Length: 319
Ligand code: A3D
Image 1: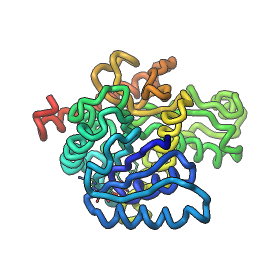
Image 2: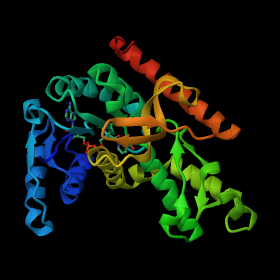
Image 3: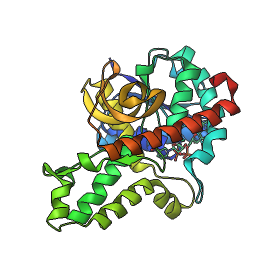
Image 4: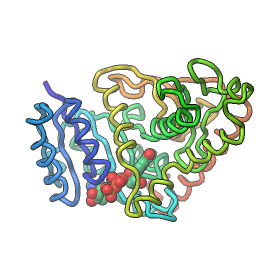
């Protein structure tokens, strides 16, 4: 039987997700949006490309949660994106309200779904989503680390003029300005980046610039687009998580997962490497952090905690 995949939010990321999921034939797709016409219009547009790209999946658009019932997986992008000059944290008040409505909508209709959240500010919104919906913690996960790591890999490959497949690295922590590109876990063709600094192929200064550009990768695109934020790479990242779940690939991917003492953090969602398979988040993978990486990770966790405290002030139900 085909899987049923619901996309809550049929905006820029939602539409791109639907297209990618259809082309990859991962399952039937329901696009849900409060703006019903956008959901229906995008579903129909993508469906009309099926004879060209040869996919036989069903696409529909709705603003009724009944139509999403018994979904195997749900990806949430409902919310407001950033405008130039805004931080992700500026979206908290408005997106928190939206995520509460979405949680109400999905909890009774698709209680067994695996839920991937993309709405910003990511770590706090995914944590709120889990609290509101009361879905098991291993079934609620946030997308951010894959995107941040992908940006970091791309910039490194351009700077070092090597194929992207040769770059191995990851970005952990919260999805904000305190995210932690892991230099001690960065390898080019299996060789530590440190060796490339020693041989003069890249300077420390250039690496710092790339780290900074990665941290501000989202803002750079917001500035160009003026209206809205990145969506191609965020959608591709969400699909990688979805595919690992639906096909039980057990891929190790950096995602925002619930931490229960891993990496010294407790009762908080933040970006760490996890295994995603048919049971959702099957494991948080522990890697050794250098002292510097650990300090930066702790700082990032504190930023997420502070923002979650702000969320609790907005809605005491999150206590
Ligand atoms: P956009 O194109 O505005 O789409 C959002 C959609 O959500 C719109 O079509 C709205 O009508 C819809 N919506 C609003 N309220 C509701 C509701 N209550 N129920 C259902 N649908 C609703 O935005 P986008 O797709 O560009 O971005 C979506 C979210 O992803 C934003 O919060 C972005 O900040 C976030 N984002 C996260 C990342 C990460 O890496 C985590 C990257 C890029 C964007």
